Image 1 (cartoon, one colour):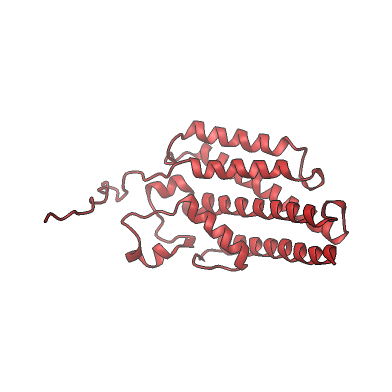
Image 2 (cartoon, rainbow, N blue to C red; image 1 turned 135 degrees about the vertical axis):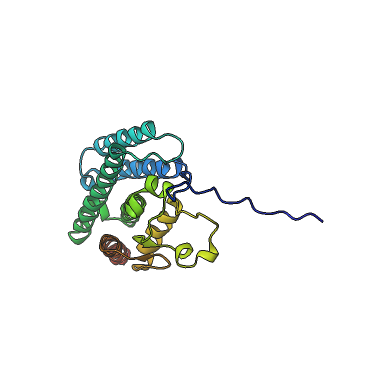
Amino acid sequence: MSRHHAPPPPPETASGDVPPLGEPRWPMAVAVVVAMVLTLLLPDSLRLAPAWVLPSVEGLLLLTMIAGDPGRIDRRSVALRAVSIALVCVLALGAVWSTVQLIDDIVHAGKETASAASLLQTGGTVWAGTVLAFSLLYFELDGGGPAARAHRMPAHPALAFPQQLSPELAPPLWRPRYVDYLYLGLTNATAFSPTDVMPLVPWAKISMAVQSLISLLILGLVVARAVNVLT
């Protein structure tokens, strides 16, 4: 009976790098589009700007990234890096602004959270937007960004995934993908603390702490307000 062997990993170059192992662009692009849709679903009082402004800016930045590096993310460029950071900043700023306005509306019993239906819809939309914004922030900042990770993983990562802590559990040349950072953002927003991914550098610890506090405020106040509305 013949034996089937796994294909060997790509050979390293003379500099120690391996051929680029870029991930497809579409998962993060879908996340950005969903974040844009969530912004459109928010009440006007919870948006940073008129309904069309943030989605238009985010869409333009996303199209610029796709045009500059289509297909797989593996082109290292200072200009593209600046565009990706700008996109994350716009998403994060919009999410934090909506969170602040939601909290203010709940505390002052505003009209956007006066009924159980509007409260759950608005609170859920803001919460989901923060999860996507922080997942993209982790995705863009860890290891110099996805393009840098496609060429070479850093010796000292900012975020330590289980596959890095236990290499025997991962295939050769494993790289974290956007879905890994989305999972990180989701679990950090529900557990309010690290689960299986450990932050190792200051920016990662601060970002995860801020996300945990934002999520705790949103969920805690939404639940408290919902109890008050229903009783």
